[in-house]
Length: 340
Image (cartoon, rainbow, N blue to C red; front, side, top):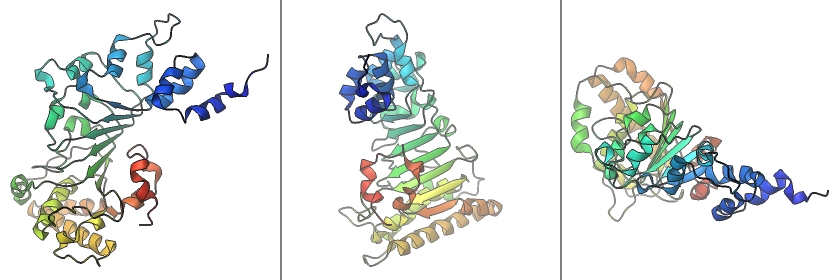
């Protein structure tokens, strides 16, 4: 019997890499061979809306039959094992443990992603919007990397207040994407002027944090808006970073400090180079970190806190393949072409 060369797994895999999600879904129903090749492509990176009774989760909790051969095997639960990246873009209407929401039902159904590597969460204008902080299900995820997108409040009265501690304590790496920061000086000023000892860090020993001051391209300024930023706003932003730095993570990398709008530095000149702006921001952060540490009589811990700080451009961060899974290639294409 002559077998078509198209049936070879390597050739089929290459063909299927060009298929859209609808085609991959149909291929899973053709045969077990197509199922085994299509499923990892379709389910390795998924987007869910937990509180909308997402059909993917609904299927996993009720064990549907995908193929027509009469099998009772719980294929949907097997698909959960293929998931490496979960994106949560909308989490509105969750009332936490208080109501009978879909999130409560998923928690009861023991929905799990055993091989999850990266959890990416898009937050709303308010970090507490939609009740995801009190969600009974999402914080039960166990990713190695947590990516928080569109964070507008990095530190509100403490460090790492942008995500539940029950989730932060599990991860090895936190990536925070910041397009703008709200003024939280009303709650942060008292905390930073306090002489009370610094609370225990929410992250495990050895975990690292990456703060990305996001711009779409290397030619854009961070914080560039209709009304130019004022120098005093820079201090409020730096205080939020310092609150993270005093938590003594193994490494705290700050990307794109040199992309900050020059108005933050008290000038309007575009002649300032990236390195000059980055040096100015780094100096301000280290000075403020030392000031807070000495006020709290924690000068002995200042060396480790200072040593954990890293500064680089986003383009430099992308030169290492460790970023893959944290960002989509399309959204960082301009930075990949950059020499910065």
